[in-house]
Picture (cartoon, rainbow, N blue to C red):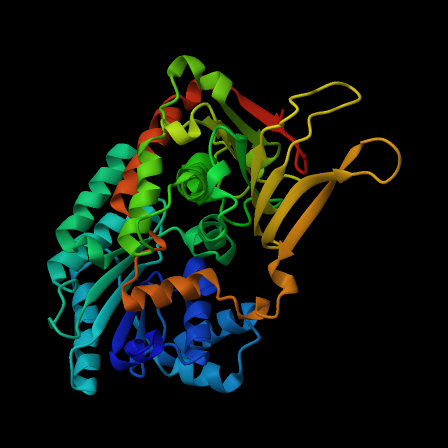
Length: 472
């Protein structure tokens, strides 16, 4: 049986990047494609078409792409960079202009003709969400989304989060996508799902029989999911001000982490079963009652945020949020899931703490609660650690905390862990949707988050200084 690389190599593919001159393409997409190319993991015949409105000659575009790659990713061999650039062409156009998409169609046809066969088409929307609808309509009207062959000419679309601004807009976007593509053709990116350390949660839980019997409310006291960044806007002020912390990472990255922690063991490791298990959890999120909103949701904004470039002078956008979520599942009865994220705080880290109940159930000044804590460190310093207690040497039965750790950086395969976007692009090529969000997951997430967004104006916006370790 052919392996994944052999399957990919067989079928010529054209990768169309809408918004190729933008930050996402420069930071993530192009380096990931170059890395896959340098590893021999792209089709033998492939082409990348960059689509944007900036005027470039062929050489100017090559120089632009080279500058982005060299500035950020100097580890690639010059020979690989040169040959990779030979596969990239540019189409100048506007996202809402019919003639621009005719030019794109002509270029696609020219490449297919030169190869002597119909190729796979992969469209990536590396643009602000406000431009999604226009591009999707143009793809539909120009018929570019239609596969040119039932045998080798599949057509797929990669679309970035956020998927809408609330339940209504997410439903509208999903309906539009449904007119163009079948569900199996739609790959909704939540790049956190592609992180090695996040995937390891599934392996850790279901490959170690000692944990599953205690993975429930009888033994687990609470779960704390944290995504902190020490930096501020870094040039993303205009975009961030339109979404805020809840939409930017709360509705997607953080709820996906919650789903991986709380889901039941899937019937199989197939894409459909894993996504269904995650979706089942998200559908069981209990809506936070309006009367409890101020107790269970905390919003904050760091001092100086309104001075960031692109941010409105009177902005009420949150840069910090803490939410208490509950699940209507017997396994997790009365177990709170705390979701906390913030910009401009003391440390950049993403981790999940599982607090197990204290068997002794004691708490005093001289005998604090002794809880076992299991921590999944997502980034940086990816790994897993467990806090447990042992007897302190000497007379008497006194215990002290110790930590057992596993760190990816201590393993020989650490340097071989693929980048998030490398893994995602590779999975799109083979049609594996496991690491991509499904319609059910997205709609369930918005159902939980939308009432919070609708009540944001009623929630106090706490001000906090940059570099704080805790927002009170």
